[in-house]
Image (cartoon, helix red, strand yellow):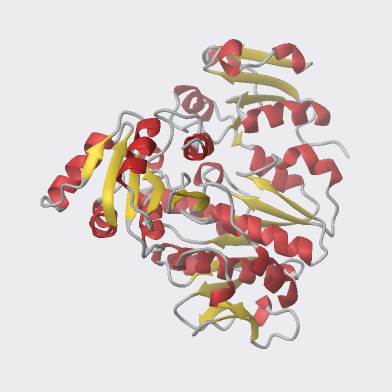
Length: 460
């Protein structure tokens, strides 16, 4: 069957991971492809000749590149108020992205997972549980593989699990068969501007679900989270919940110390089933209990038995850069939580520890509120080390919120912060990298920052 984009001219804006996947895939369906990025080929580390049949406009975007374009694929890191995107909208050129193109063509059921925090852990757990349940499972989206690369290999009875960011979702007009919203708390306001805009982008994961005789899509929402819960009125299909505070009739919940699945999330007979005891979860923190509950609700709807959930959760050691134990050195445990790029995520991390902390905060701010997190941080921390672009701003917040607290200092870099942490920490303490800001002041992404932290700690 001929693809709708065959013989069409498609422009790809941004040539990072998603853009490169599009440049590989689009020619295979017969599209004429133009790639544009504001960086040069040398800055991108790319040789255009490696992409035969693809035209390039690098080192900047020019309006003429839109001439004759039938669709504009916008990579996740490209803001929609960029002049070239605004020009495309004014010309009536439809916008899309790799996730949207994939979901429009995927023959298998797609499970989409989004949230301000916990996406990667929940997505990873969901994929592992479905694999344990003997489904051929594909995991990607905002993590791992760009799924367009494997689209020809996916079959109807497979399961596809996608982590979806607000950047991907703001263009979405095609929701997954199972759409999960873990939580919606302030994040990426430097990109979305307002919480309303941010919430509406997240809501696209369920806004376009369908409820017909032939297909009934399912939404999985967090009962305990106000942002996620507020989407209830937008659901047209089935609705499942997960909660650590309340019993739910369909989904997963915590009853005392037991994790329970019930209703559509318990495929055996719909009756409540115990997955495991809370103490059997290897991951630290109440936020990870919610991630596990979400994965149980999602995979139950997707067809996994309770035994598969139990087996995977008991053996799950977590995802890199998320409260990851790097090593214990001289009685001090060093933990890499580089994924914490918002104060809300640091707050969740802080609640996971009873040990005295030497806390590393910094990076680049996303115009978010730091007050609540700082209030708890000064209570739990032996010392707070500040680094990166946001260091001065965070120091101002500390002085404003807890002027009597003086156990904080500035470091010129993460290297210096780790060395200073080693000097300050006592046996039994935890040195916690949970920055609260993005990594873009000094690193390509949070993973590169986390890897650097690992290297520094392992060289102590």
